Length: 100
Image (cartoon, rainbow, N blue to C red; front, side):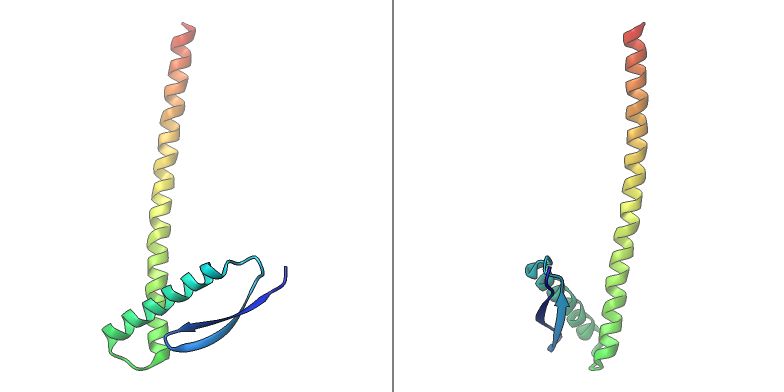
């Protein structure tokens, strides 16, 4: 696949990024909008004009969201594992009952 160059805008700054040919431009646009939104939220709360500070704080907020979701996913996977074990036990019991 051929790489494409896209121009995006985040927090009033334009960037040219290289994306793989198969990457969906709509997805990239969604990511761009999300990061822009997070930076604007930080800017309103911190009232700072320092773009680097805003970007770092936005990155920390995004990282926090990511790790919270990862933890929830791990918990869900544990629950799924427990349910699968219970289902296996029930199946075994049903098979034993059917054979007796």
